[in-house]
Amino acid sequence: MSTVRPDQRQAAAESILMEGNARLDHPAHGCLGIIRNLHSLLEIYESELAAVNQQLAVFKASSSSTPQPSQPEIDPLVAKMFNEGDNSRWVNLEADATINSVPSDSRGKQPVRPDEEARDDEADDIFMESD
Image (tube, rainbow, N blue to C red; front, side, top):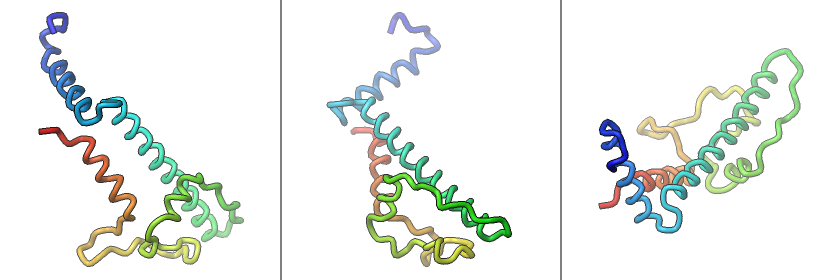
């Protein structure tokens, strides 16, 4: 710590503490494992968003007078995510392109797929501090 500038010592100490806690919680990979896990989740969500945006473009084009573009290719990983679990709460946009919103439950919350709840819990676990 003596080589660190005085104005950066607080941040350096916090960084060392965070990395130590991450190593305790994840002995094999520490911070790097957490970063890789978050990066892979980000890639999955970006792929899912791109696929949804492509479908949205197709549905917008089909509702206008312009010719409809071909069905976009969907990433196999994204397709697998949509095909697993209980999809009964999801709207089939191919069947009805006039739907304006996803129905909410009685408390006004949007439905969440079970696998998304698990991913959200995993992300929360990553950021929890150890006691």
